Amino acid sequence: MAQEVIKIRGGQTLKGEVNNHGAKNSAVAIIPAAILAEDKVTIEGLPEISDVETLVSLLGDLNIKTELDGMTLNVDPNEIENAPLPNNKVESLRASYYMMGAMLGRFKKCVIGLPGGCPLGPRPIDQHIKGFKALGAKIDESSTTSMKIEADKLVGANIFLDIVSVGATINIMLAAVRAEGQTVIENAAKEPEVVDVANFLSSLGANIKGAGTSTIKINGVEHLHGSHHQVIPDRIEAGTYMCIAAACGENIKINNIIPTHVEPLTVKLKELGVDIQVNDDSAVIKRSTPYSSVDIKTLVYPGFATDLQQPITPLLFMADGVSFVTETIYPARFRHVDELKNMGANISADNGTATIKPSSLTGAEVYASDLRAGACLIVAGLLAEGVTTIYNVKHIYRGYTNIVSTLKSLGADIWTEEV
Ligand code: EPU
Image 1 (cartoon, helix red, strand yellow):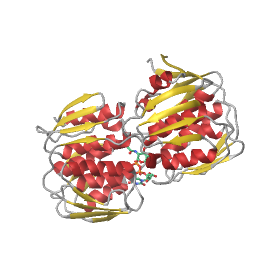
Image 2 (cartoon, protein in one colour):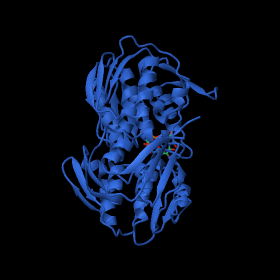
Image 3 (tube, protein in one colour):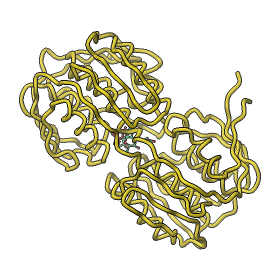
Image 4 (tube, protein in one colour):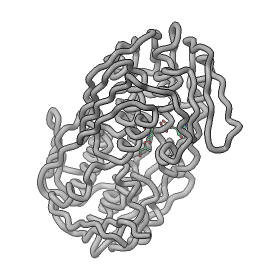
């Protein structure tokens, strides 16, 4: 069967502007969250990615009327029906787990396939389940392909997360906003996307306090109305283009950023020696080698994002010494390492830490094992001498809006081919 590959002839200097899109990891929670509304919802500033299309199609399976026009989604839930969702759409992305919390909150019951997503090593959802159970739900996990979650009624509870989890924090908020009484989530994730989802739910009439801190308090309400919401800018998409600019850019301007959200990355880029100027809602970056080696440790927000660990790695080949990248969120998130070795990189990974030495890259045939590994290979391909062919690009399209045409507009020699 024919499949699309991305090809890059590296070595070009890139110039121009990039308009950053809405945050994927907000969008993929806010679309399911719209199930909780009893009237029309408009969501603006969505990224144009396949994960958004899949979730919109899942809303359709619940008889919700949707209109997706570029970055704007209109949702009319007036004829919503509870239908089982044990299908291959659910399995094609991780964030389909938000359908669980949203459907539980809306119907007190759902039957849903198990979530898929990027293979980053074990990705359990025990904390989500612990939260649903605390609110009064019973979970039937006897099927190997789907899960049945059901509650006579949902009653607020105190939930202490054993692990700081973005997904569990958001999913419990979704299930709790229409529960009876107060829910308190302790050790909650503080990521900007959690705050964005809480703001969306508040715009529907939910009562949520403390999003963005480690204690979130939700006072359940009976009904949620419609609203308009603008998704926050994507700190990971912006960060990826910042890495690209530092690799081969000449004054690339990245528009639509929230500087505090990208600060963990800008601080690291400055440590490397990257010439970066941050304005109110944009950043201008240029390649300014030689870079200094740095050590990076991924942490929950506001630490260095795990999702940027892979895209920043090619910059470390341009440094004057040995760098270390330690992954604490997904210790197995190193499937890009073998691909980079194929490109001639001096890199190894062991026990959750990658050791990265100065290297020159050569184009090769490489495989995008997951979304951010794909982004890493794009940065590497832009730097490499010769042509790089990236296979399995469906992962890249799950998270980056029009990345090939955007890079082409900056002057990259990049194209797609059917093979
Ligand atoms: N974890 C558990 N049990 C749970 C939930 C999480 O053990 O019930 C563990 C995970 O295995 C991981 C850690 O806790 O080791 C943190 O996971 P988290 O739940 O925060 O991750 P997630 O919600 O599944 C989201 C993003 C990821 C991003 C992580 C960390 C979405 C759809 N995905 O995943 O994004 O890496 O938070 O910030 O929001 C990506 O965009 O490429 C991506 C993978």
